Length: 337
Image (cartoon, rainbow, N blue to C red; front, side):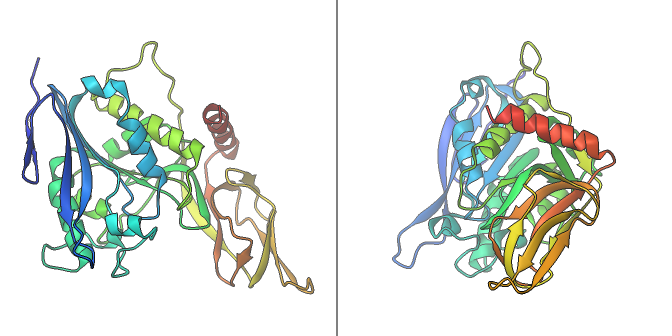
C-alpha cells in the first residue's frame, strides 16, 4: 500500500492520517481585529490525488458553505485516499458583509493570480492560489446565482479538456455547460497549472436551497469516487447522465416595468413561446417576452421588477430537448425526496 505524502499549508505541515484546521491570515478589519481564511485539511493515510473544494469566492453565495460543512461530517472521509483541502469561505470580508465583493468593490474571481503587494483582492487571490490551488491536482468551486437570481444545478467548465468533461459527467447534475475561461478568474489560473476545475452553479445568493445543497454534496462525493479518493458504492450507484448544452442565451426585458413570469426554473420552452410579460403599473402598456429557441430555463430572475435590458431568463439549447426534459425531471424527483 503506497503511503500518502505530507502537505504544507502556510506554516503547518499536515501528515498522513491527520485532520487539521488551518487559519490563513487575510487583511485585518479597520478595528485591527484579525481575520483568517478557514481551511480543513484531511490527509489520508494512503496515496491519492489532492482535491480542493472552495466556496464563497463571492461572499454572498452561501449554498457552497453548507455543502462543505455537510461534506466534512461524512464518515467516509475517514478512509480517503489522497488529500482533501476544504475552504468553505474564501472571501471572508464579503462573507461578513453579505456581499459578493471585497471592501474595495473588486470581484475576487476577476483578481487572479493576484499579488502579495497588490490590492486587498489581489492579495487574497494570491494567498488562495499559492496556499491551496497550487497544492492540488483537481478543484471544485461552488457558486450560486446572484441576488434575486436562481440557477438550476449545473456544472460549468472547459469541456474541451477530456478530464474536465469526464468529471463534469461524473458529478451528476442535469446540465453541463461549456464555459469559456475568463481572464483573471480562478479557472484561468488553474488552467495555467494544467488543473481540471469544475464550477458548480446552483441556487440563489444569500439563500439556502436544499435541492442545490443535496445535489452539490452528492456531486462532490461522485467526483471523489471518480478520481479514486473514495471507493465505489456497492451496489454501484447509478449516476445521472447529464445533457450538454451546446449554447445558452439570456432573454432580456424589452422595457422597464412589472414582470409576470409564465415559465419556471428547469421548465422547457419552445421557440416563440410566451415566457413573460412586462407592463407598466397602470396596465396601459404591455410587452411580451418569447423564447429565442427550444430549450430549458437554467437561470432566471426572481424579482418581479425589471429595467429595460435586465437579464431575466437564461435558456440553454440541447441536441435533444426531450432528453433534456427527462433528465431535469429525473433530477428533480431524485433530489426532492
